[in-house]
Image (cartoon, rainbow, N blue to C red; front, side):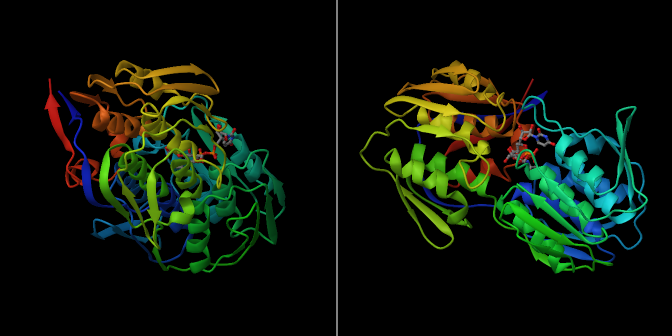
Amino acid sequence: MEEVIKIKGGNLLEGNIRVSGAKNATVALIPAAVLAHNKVTIVGIPNISDVRSLKEILEYMNIKVTTPSLDAIVIDPAEMINKPLIIDAVSKLRASYYFMGALLGKYKHVTIRMPGGCNLGPRPIDLHLKGFEALGAKVEYRDDNYILTADELIGTRIYLDFASVGATINIIMAAVYAKGETVIENAAREPEIIDCITLLNEMGANIRGGGTSRIIIEGVEKLDGCFHEIIPDRIEAGTYIILAAAMGKDVTIENVIPYHLDSLISKLKEIGVDIETDYDKVHIKRNEHQLTKTNIKTMPYPGFATDLQAPLTALLTQAIGNSVITETIYVARFKHCEQLNKMGANIIVASPSATIVGPTKLIGTDVSATDLRCGAALVIAGLIAQGTTTIHDIYHIDRGYEDIVSKLSDLGADIHREIID
Ligand code: EPZ
Protein backbone atom coordinates (compact mmCIF):
# COMPACT_ATOMS: atom_id res chain seq x y z
CA MET A 1 0.00 0.00 0.00
CA GLU A 2 1.33 3.43 -0.92
CA GLU A 3 -0.16 6.93 -1.03
CA VAL A 4 0.47 8.71 -4.32
CA ILE A 5 -0.55 12.01 -5.91
CA LYS A 6 -2.37 11.74 -9.23
CA ILE A 7 -2.63 14.72 -11.59
CA LYS A 8 -4.59 14.92 -14.83
CA GLY A 9 -2.78 17.65 -16.73
CA GLY A 10 -4.01 20.43 -19.02
CA ASN A 11 -6.35 22.44 -16.77
CA LEU A 12 -5.74 26.19 -16.76
CA LEU A 13 -5.64 27.49 -13.19
CA GLU A 14 -7.53 30.45 -11.78
CA GLY A 15 -7.93 32.02 -8.36
CA ASN A 16 -5.91 32.77 -5.22
CA ILE A 17 -3.40 30.54 -3.44
CA ARG A 18 -2.04 31.40 0.01
CA VAL A 19 1.55 30.69 1.02
CA SER A 20 2.22 29.18 4.47
CA GLY A 21 4.97 30.05 6.95
CA ALA A 22 8.57 29.37 5.96
CA LYS A 23 9.64 25.74 6.50
CA ASN A 24 13.33 26.66 6.63
CA ALA A 25 12.68 29.32 9.25
CA THR A 26 10.35 27.07 11.26
CA VAL A 27 12.89 24.23 11.53
CA ALA A 28 15.44 26.70 12.95
CA LEU A 29 13.13 28.72 15.21
CA ILE A 30 11.68 25.72 17.02
CA PRO A 31 15.13 24.52 18.19
CA ALA A 32 16.11 28.15 18.92
CA ALA A 33 13.15 28.42 21.31
CA VAL A 34 14.83 25.98 23.74
CA LEU A 35 17.42 28.68 24.45
CA ALA A 36 14.73 30.58 26.39
CA HIS A 37 13.94 30.00 30.08
CA ASN A 38 10.20 30.38 29.63
CA LYS A 39 7.35 30.22 27.11
CA VAL A 40 7.97 31.01 23.43
CA THR A 41 4.93 31.36 21.17
CA ILE A 42 5.49 31.09 17.42
CA VAL A 43 2.59 31.69 15.02
CA GLY A 44 2.30 31.28 11.28
CA ILE A 45 4.09 27.92 11.22
CA PRO A 46 3.29 25.54 8.36
CA ASN A 47 1.39 22.29 9.04
CA ILE A 48 4.12 19.97 7.68
CA SER A 49 5.68 16.72 8.86
CA ASP A 50 8.98 18.36 9.89
CA VAL A 51 7.11 20.32 12.59
CA ARG A 52 5.68 17.07 13.98
CA SER A 53 9.18 15.53 14.13
CA LEU A 54 10.55 18.59 15.96
CA LYS A 55 7.64 18.52 18.42
CA GLU A 56 8.50 14.87 19.20
CA ILE A 57 12.12 15.85 19.92
CA LEU A 58 11.06 18.71 22.21
CA GLU A 59 8.68 16.49 24.19
CA TYR A 60 11.42 13.88 24.51
CA MET A 61 13.41 16.59 26.36
CA ASN A 62 10.49 17.19 28.74
CA ILE A 63 9.61 20.48 27.02
CA LYS A 64 5.91 21.34 27.22
CA VAL A 65 4.56 21.89 23.71
CA THR A 66 1.02 22.98 22.91
CA THR A 67 -0.47 23.75 19.51
CA PRO A 68 -3.44 26.06 20.13
CA SER A 69 -4.07 26.03 16.37
CA LEU A 70 -2.65 24.33 13.28
CA ASP A 71 -0.34 27.30 12.66
CA ALA A 72 0.74 28.08 16.23
CA ILE A 73 3.08 26.39 18.68
CA VAL A 74 3.80 27.28 22.32
CA ILE A 75 7.11 25.94 23.61
CA ASP A 76 7.82 26.01 27.35
CA PRO A 77 11.42 24.94 28.08
CA ALA A 78 11.25 25.86 31.80
CA GLU A 79 11.64 22.24 32.94
CA MET A 80 13.53 20.82 30.00
CA ILE A 81 16.12 18.04 30.40
CA ASN A 82 19.16 18.04 28.11
CA LYS A 83 19.07 14.35 27.14
CA PRO A 84 21.14 12.65 24.37
CA LEU A 85 19.14 13.14 21.16
CA ILE A 86 19.33 9.66 19.71
CA ILE A 87 15.65 9.01 18.94
CA ASP A 88 14.41 8.24 15.41
CA ALA A 89 12.74 11.66 14.99
CA VAL A 90 16.24 13.20 14.96
CA SER A 91 17.11 11.27 11.81
CA LYS A 92 13.96 12.34 9.98
CA LEU A 93 15.18 15.83 9.25
CA ARG A 94 18.63 17.30 8.68
CA ALA A 95 17.61 20.47 10.49
CA SER A 96 17.64 18.58 13.80
CA TYR A 97 21.29 19.63 13.81
CA TYR A 98 20.09 23.04 15.04
CA PHE A 99 19.74 21.40 18.46
CA MET A 100 23.55 21.16 18.44
CA GLY A 101 23.94 24.94 18.56
CA ALA A 102 20.97 25.50 20.86
CA LEU A 103 21.91 22.86 23.47
CA LEU A 104 25.63 23.63 23.31
CA GLY A 105 24.81 27.31 23.74
CA LYS A 106 22.48 26.73 26.69
CA TYR A 107 24.12 23.79 28.52
CA LYS A 108 27.67 23.65 27.06
CA HIS A 109 27.13 20.00 26.17
CA VAL A 110 25.00 18.04 23.70
CA THR A 111 24.88 14.50 22.31
CA ILE A 112 22.99 14.06 19.03
CA ARG A 113 22.66 11.40 16.35
CA MET A 114 24.10 12.39 12.93
CA PRO A 115 21.37 14.44 11.11
CA GLY A 116 19.21 12.96 8.30
CA GLY A 117 17.66 14.96 5.42
CA CYS A 118 17.13 14.98 1.67
CA ASN A 119 19.29 12.90 -0.64
CA LEU A 120 21.18 15.83 -2.22
CA GLY A 121 24.60 14.28 -2.29
CA PRO A 122 27.14 14.73 0.52
CA ARG A 123 25.92 17.23 3.09
CA PRO A 124 28.75 17.78 5.59
CA ILE A 125 28.48 19.89 8.70
CA ASP A 126 32.18 20.72 8.98
CA LEU A 127 31.53 24.48 9.03
CA HIS A 128 29.08 24.09 11.92
CA LEU A 129 31.66 22.08 13.91
CA LYS A 130 34.46 24.54 13.06
CA GLY A 131 32.33 27.31 14.53
CA PHE A 132 31.59 25.37 17.71
CA GLU A 133 35.28 24.54 18.17
CA ALA A 134 36.24 28.20 17.62
CA LEU A 135 33.90 29.09 20.51
CA GLY A 136 35.73 26.60 22.74
CA ALA A 137 33.78 23.36 22.29
CA LYS A 138 35.35 19.92 22.02
CA VAL A 139 33.78 17.82 19.24
CA GLU A 140 33.78 14.02 19.38
CA TYR A 141 32.09 11.55 17.02
CA ARG A 142 31.29 8.11 18.49
CA ASP A 143 28.81 5.39 17.45
CA ASP A 144 27.00 7.64 14.93
CA ASN A 145 26.62 10.41 17.51
CA TYR A 146 28.22 13.83 17.86
CA ILE A 147 29.22 14.73 21.42
CA LEU A 148 29.96 18.42 21.95
CA THR A 149 31.27 19.71 25.29
CA ALA A 150 32.75 23.02 26.50
CA ASP A 151 33.97 24.27 29.88
CA GLU A 152 32.94 27.68 28.69
CA LEU A 153 32.06 29.34 25.38
CA ILE A 154 34.05 32.46 24.57
CA GLY A 155 33.13 34.88 21.78
CA THR A 156 35.54 34.94 18.85
CA ARG A 157 35.80 35.78 15.14
CA ILE A 158 34.70 32.98 12.79
CA TYR A 159 35.20 33.06 9.02
CA LEU A 160 32.88 30.72 7.06
CA ASP A 161 34.61 29.21 4.01
CA PHE A 162 31.14 29.04 2.42
CA ALA A 163 28.12 31.21 3.27
CA SER A 164 26.32 28.22 4.79
CA VAL A 165 22.75 28.83 6.01
CA GLY A 166 22.84 26.05 8.57
CA ALA A 167 26.29 26.86 9.90
CA THR A 168 25.40 30.55 10.24
CA ILE A 169 22.27 29.82 12.28
CA ASN A 170 23.89 27.06 14.35
CA ILE A 171 26.87 29.23 15.32
CA ILE A 172 24.56 32.13 16.25
CA MET A 173 22.65 29.82 18.62
CA ALA A 174 25.87 28.51 20.18
CA ALA A 175 27.11 32.08 20.68
CA VAL A 176 24.10 33.82 22.27
CA TYR A 177 25.23 32.89 25.80
CA ALA A 178 29.00 32.92 25.09
CA LYS A 179 31.22 35.34 26.98
CA GLY A 180 31.92 38.47 24.92
CA GLU A 181 31.50 39.17 21.24
CA THR A 182 31.34 36.68 18.36
CA VAL A 183 31.71 37.90 14.78
CA ILE A 184 30.70 35.63 11.89
CA GLU A 185 32.35 36.70 8.62
CA ASN A 186 31.01 35.55 5.24
CA ALA A 187 27.74 34.69 6.98
CA ALA A 188 24.77 33.56 4.87
CA ARG A 189 22.16 36.29 4.21
CA GLU A 190 18.96 34.25 3.72
CA PRO A 191 15.69 35.76 5.08
CA GLU A 192 15.26 32.70 7.33
CA ILE A 193 18.45 33.72 9.15
CA ILE A 194 17.04 37.21 9.72
CA ASP A 195 13.84 35.63 11.07
CA CYS A 196 15.82 33.48 13.50
CA ILE A 197 17.84 36.51 14.67
CA THR A 198 14.59 38.46 15.12
CA LEU A 199 13.22 35.70 17.36
CA LEU A 200 16.43 35.52 19.43
CA ASN A 201 16.54 39.32 19.84
CA GLU A 202 12.86 39.26 20.89
CA MET A 203 14.01 36.75 23.56
CA GLY A 204 16.65 39.23 24.73
CA ALA A 205 19.68 38.30 22.66
CA ASN A 206 21.96 40.97 21.24
CA ILE A 207 22.58 40.14 17.58
CA ARG A 208 23.35 42.67 14.83
CA GLY A 209 23.95 42.39 11.09
CA GLY A 210 21.24 39.87 10.15
CA GLY A 211 20.92 39.76 6.35
CA THR A 212 24.49 40.94 5.84
CA SER A 213 27.61 38.81 5.55
CA ARG A 214 28.91 40.03 8.93
CA ILE A 215 26.86 39.06 11.98
CA ILE A 216 27.85 40.21 15.48
CA ILE A 217 26.57 38.41 18.59
CA GLU A 218 27.13 39.92 22.05
CA GLY A 219 26.71 37.18 24.67
CA VAL A 220 23.94 37.72 27.27
CA GLU A 221 23.07 36.08 30.60
CA LYS A 222 19.48 35.00 30.05
CA LEU A 223 16.84 34.73 27.34
CA ASP A 224 13.13 35.01 28.04
CA GLY A 225 10.06 33.80 26.22
CA CYS A 226 8.47 35.90 23.49
CA PHE A 227 5.82 35.99 20.78
CA HIS A 228 6.92 35.67 17.15
CA GLU A 229 5.29 35.41 13.73
CA ILE A 230 7.19 33.40 11.10
CA ILE A 231 7.93 34.92 7.68
CA PRO A 232 6.16 33.47 4.62
CA ASP A 233 7.85 30.60 2.79
CA ARG A 234 9.67 32.14 -0.19
CA ILE A 235 10.37 28.74 -1.72
CA GLU A 236 6.74 27.62 -1.52
CA ALA A 237 5.80 31.02 -2.95
CA GLY A 238 8.37 30.65 -5.74
CA THR A 239 7.11 27.16 -6.51
CA TYR A 240 3.52 28.42 -6.90
CA ILE A 241 4.66 31.41 -8.96
CA ILE A 242 6.46 29.04 -11.36
CA LEU A 243 3.42 26.75 -11.41
CA ALA A 244 1.19 29.71 -12.27
CA ALA A 245 3.64 30.74 -14.99
CA ALA A 246 3.23 27.24 -16.43
CA MET A 247 -0.54 26.75 -16.22
CA GLY A 248 -2.08 29.88 -14.72
CA LYS A 249 -4.82 31.72 -16.59
CA ASP A 250 -5.19 34.32 -13.81
CA VAL A 251 -3.60 33.42 -10.47
CA THR A 252 -2.75 35.49 -7.38
CA ILE A 253 -0.23 34.12 -4.89
CA GLU A 254 -0.89 35.65 -1.45
CA ASN A 255 1.24 36.08 1.70
CA VAL A 256 4.42 36.69 -0.25
CA ILE A 257 7.36 39.04 0.39
CA PRO A 258 8.19 39.83 -3.28
CA TYR A 259 11.57 41.24 -2.25
CA HIS A 260 12.60 37.70 -1.19
CA LEU A 261 11.97 36.50 -4.76
CA ASP A 262 13.69 39.24 -6.78
CA SER A 263 15.97 36.83 -8.65
CA LEU A 264 13.08 34.51 -9.66
CA ILE A 265 10.66 37.29 -10.61
CA SER A 266 13.21 39.05 -12.80
CA LYS A 267 14.04 35.76 -14.55
CA LEU A 268 10.36 34.99 -15.21
CA LYS A 269 9.82 38.46 -16.67
CA GLU A 270 12.89 37.90 -18.85
CA ILE A 271 11.41 34.69 -20.37
CA GLY A 272 8.05 36.34 -21.09
CA VAL A 273 5.84 35.67 -18.05
CA ASP A 274 3.17 38.33 -17.36
CA ILE A 275 3.88 38.85 -13.66
CA GLU A 276 3.03 41.78 -11.38
CA THR A 277 3.94 42.25 -7.73
CA ASP A 278 1.97 44.02 -5.03
CA TYR A 279 2.94 44.65 -1.38
CA ASP A 280 2.34 41.04 -0.23
CA LYS A 281 1.19 39.23 -3.34
CA VAL A 282 2.17 38.26 -6.86
CA HIS A 283 -0.28 38.19 -9.77
CA ILE A 284 0.23 36.11 -12.91
CA LYS A 285 -1.87 36.26 -16.09
CA ARG A 286 -1.59 34.03 -19.12
CA ASN A 287 -0.44 35.76 -22.30
CA GLU A 288 -0.04 34.67 -25.90
CA HIS A 289 3.79 34.66 -25.84
CA GLN A 290 5.54 31.31 -25.73
CA LEU A 291 8.23 31.35 -23.09
CA THR A 292 11.82 31.78 -24.21
CA LYS A 293 14.93 30.07 -22.87
CA THR A 294 17.19 31.45 -20.16
CA ASN A 295 20.30 30.52 -18.17
CA ILE A 296 20.32 30.19 -14.39
CA LYS A 297 23.17 29.87 -11.90
CA THR A 298 22.13 29.04 -8.33
CA MET A 299 23.83 31.16 -5.66
CA PRO A 300 23.45 31.91 -1.95
CA TYR A 301 20.78 34.53 -1.23
CA PRO A 302 20.07 37.02 -2.79
CA GLY A 303 21.15 34.98 -5.83
CA PHE A 304 18.85 32.45 -7.52
CA ALA A 305 17.75 29.92 -4.87
CA THR A 306 18.95 26.35 -5.35
CA ASP A 307 15.57 25.19 -3.97
CA LEU A 308 13.81 26.73 -6.98
CA GLN A 309 15.97 25.29 -9.75
CA ALA A 310 14.06 21.99 -9.93
CA PRO A 311 10.61 23.66 -10.15
CA LEU A 312 11.97 26.11 -12.75
CA THR A 313 13.42 23.22 -14.76
CA ALA A 314 9.88 21.83 -15.15
CA LEU A 315 8.73 25.19 -16.56
CA LEU A 316 11.73 25.56 -18.88
CA THR A 317 10.82 22.29 -20.64
CA GLN A 318 8.10 24.49 -22.25
CA ALA A 319 10.41 27.35 -23.27
CA ILE A 320 11.67 27.80 -26.84
CA GLY A 321 15.40 27.04 -27.06
CA ASN A 322 18.05 25.51 -24.83
CA SER A 323 18.18 26.71 -21.20
CA VAL A 324 21.20 25.96 -19.04
CA ILE A 325 20.96 25.60 -15.26
CA THR A 326 24.23 25.60 -13.31
CA GLU A 327 24.05 24.39 -9.70
CA THR A 328 26.73 25.83 -7.43
CA ILE A 329 25.22 24.82 -4.06
CA TYR A 330 24.43 21.10 -4.41
CA VAL A 331 26.20 19.74 -7.49
CA ALA A 332 24.19 16.48 -7.29
CA ARG A 333 20.81 18.23 -7.30
CA PHE A 334 19.66 16.95 -10.73
CA LYS A 335 17.72 13.78 -9.86
CA HIS A 336 14.51 15.50 -10.96
CA CYS A 337 15.84 15.65 -14.56
CA GLU A 338 15.67 11.87 -14.96
CA GLN A 339 12.07 11.90 -13.74
CA LEU A 340 11.13 14.77 -16.08
CA ASN A 341 12.78 12.97 -19.00
CA LYS A 342 10.51 9.98 -18.26
CA MET A 343 7.62 12.37 -19.01
CA GLY A 344 9.11 13.42 -22.35
CA ALA A 345 11.44 16.25 -21.37
CA ASN A 346 14.82 16.46 -23.08
CA ILE A 347 17.31 17.42 -20.36
CA ILE A 348 20.99 16.62 -20.65
CA VAL A 349 22.77 16.57 -17.27
CA ALA A 350 26.51 17.23 -17.12
CA SER A 351 26.93 18.17 -13.47
CA PRO A 352 27.18 20.92 -12.27
CA SER A 353 24.97 21.95 -15.24
CA ALA A 354 21.85 20.70 -16.99
CA THR A 355 20.72 21.73 -20.48
CA ILE A 356 16.97 21.80 -21.03
CA VAL A 357 16.08 21.49 -24.72
CA GLY A 358 12.68 23.09 -25.26
CA PRO A 359 9.88 23.07 -25.92
CA THR A 360 8.97 19.40 -25.37
CA LYS A 361 5.57 17.76 -25.00
CA LEU A 362 5.16 16.17 -21.57
CA ILE A 363 3.10 13.00 -21.20
CA GLY A 364 1.81 11.78 -17.86
CA THR A 365 3.40 8.60 -16.43
CA ASP A 366 4.64 7.14 -13.12
CA VAL A 367 7.41 9.21 -11.52
CA SER A 368 9.12 9.40 -8.11
CA ALA A 369 9.85 12.38 -5.89
CA THR A 370 13.51 11.82 -5.04
CA ASP A 371 13.52 14.86 -2.76
CA LEU A 372 11.27 17.73 -1.69
CA ARG A 373 11.93 20.08 -4.60
CA CYS A 374 12.01 17.26 -7.18
CA GLY A 375 8.49 16.50 -5.94
CA ALA A 376 7.50 20.10 -6.56
CA ALA A 377 8.95 19.95 -10.07
CA LEU A 378 6.93 16.79 -10.80
CA VAL A 379 3.70 18.44 -9.61
CA ILE A 380 4.32 21.30 -12.05
CA ALA A 381 5.19 18.87 -14.85
CA GLY A 382 2.05 16.85 -14.07
CA LEU A 383 -0.11 19.96 -14.37
CA ILE A 384 1.47 20.68 -17.78
CA ALA A 385 1.48 17.09 -19.10
CA GLN A 386 -1.10 15.44 -21.32
CA GLY A 387 -2.74 12.54 -19.48
CA THR A 388 -2.30 11.40 -15.90
CA THR A 389 0.90 11.62 -13.84
CA THR A 390 1.28 9.45 -10.74
CA ILE A 391 3.85 10.76 -8.26
CA HIS A 392 5.32 8.24 -5.81
CA ASP A 393 7.30 8.89 -2.58
CA ILE A 394 5.13 11.91 -1.84
CA TYR A 395 6.26 12.02 1.83
CA HIS A 396 9.07 14.25 0.53
CA ILE A 397 6.48 16.74 -0.75
CA ASP A 398 4.57 16.69 2.53
CA ARG A 399 7.73 17.85 4.33
CA GLY A 400 7.63 21.25 2.66
CA TYR A 401 4.28 22.01 1.02
CA GLU A 402 1.35 22.34 3.40
CA ASP A 403 -1.96 21.11 1.89
CA ILE A 404 -0.57 21.21 -1.66
CA VAL A 405 -3.36 19.03 -3.09
CA SER A 406 -6.21 21.12 -1.65
CA LYS A 407 -4.46 24.40 -2.49
CA LEU A 408 -4.05 23.35 -6.15
CA SER A 409 -7.54 21.82 -6.39
CA ASP A 410 -8.91 25.20 -5.28
CA LEU A 411 -7.17 26.69 -8.34
CA GLY A 412 -8.92 24.19 -10.61
CA ALA A 413 -6.21 21.55 -10.89
CA ASP A 414 -7.33 17.95 -11.40
CA ILE A 415 -5.20 16.56 -8.56
CA HIS A 416 -5.88 14.09 -5.77
CA ARG A 417 -4.21 11.69 -3.33
CA GLU A 418 -4.85 7.98 -3.75
CA ILE A 419 -3.86 4.85 -1.87
CA ILE A 420 -2.62 2.21 -4.33
CA ASP A 421 -1.42 -1.39 -3.82
C1 EPZ B 1 19.52 25.18 3.85
O1 EPZ B 1 20.23 23.95 3.92
C2 EPZ B 1 18.11 24.78 3.45
N1 EPZ B 1 17.57 23.87 4.45
C3 EPZ B 1 18.14 24.09 2.09
O2 EPZ B 1 16.80 23.83 1.74
C4 EPZ B 1 18.74 25.05 1.07
O3 EPZ B 1 18.84 24.38 -0.17
C5 EPZ B 1 20.14 25.47 1.54
O4 EPZ B 1 20.05 26.06 2.86
C6 EPZ B 1 20.78 26.47 0.60
O5 EPZ B 1 19.96 27.59 0.49
C7 EPZ B 1 17.13 24.39 5.61
O6 EPZ B 1 17.19 25.59 5.84
C8 EPZ B 1 16.55 23.42 6.60
P1 EPZ B 1 23.97 25.21 3.49
P2 EPZ B 1 21.71 23.94 4.59
O7 EPZ B 1 24.58 24.92 4.82
O8 EPZ B 1 21.72 24.87 5.74
C9 EPZ B 1 27.84 22.92 1.98
C10 EPZ B 1 14.99 22.58 0.97
O9 EPZ B 1 14.74 22.02 -0.11
N2 EPZ B 1 28.19 22.85 3.40
O10 EPZ B 1 23.82 26.62 3.04
O11 EPZ B 1 22.10 22.53 4.79
C11 EPZ B 1 26.69 21.97 1.66
O12 EPZ B 1 27.18 20.68 1.41
C12 EPZ B 1 16.36 22.46 1.59
O13 EPZ B 1 14.18 23.28 1.63
C13 EPZ B 1 29.44 22.38 3.77
O14 EPZ B 1 30.25 22.01 2.92
O15 EPZ B 1 22.54 24.55 3.39
C14 EPZ B 1 26.07 22.58 0.44
O16 EPZ B 1 26.82 22.20 -0.71
C15 EPZ B 1 17.30 21.63 0.73
N3 EPZ B 1 29.75 22.29 5.08
C16 EPZ B 1 26.27 24.07 0.67
O17 EPZ B 1 27.31 24.22 1.65
C17 EPZ B 1 28.90 22.68 6.06
O18 EPZ B 1 29.24 22.61 7.25
C18 EPZ B 1 24.99 24.76 1.16
O19 EPZ B 1 24.75 24.30 2.42
C19 EPZ B 1 27.62 23.16 5.67
C20 EPZ B 1 27.29 23.25 4.34
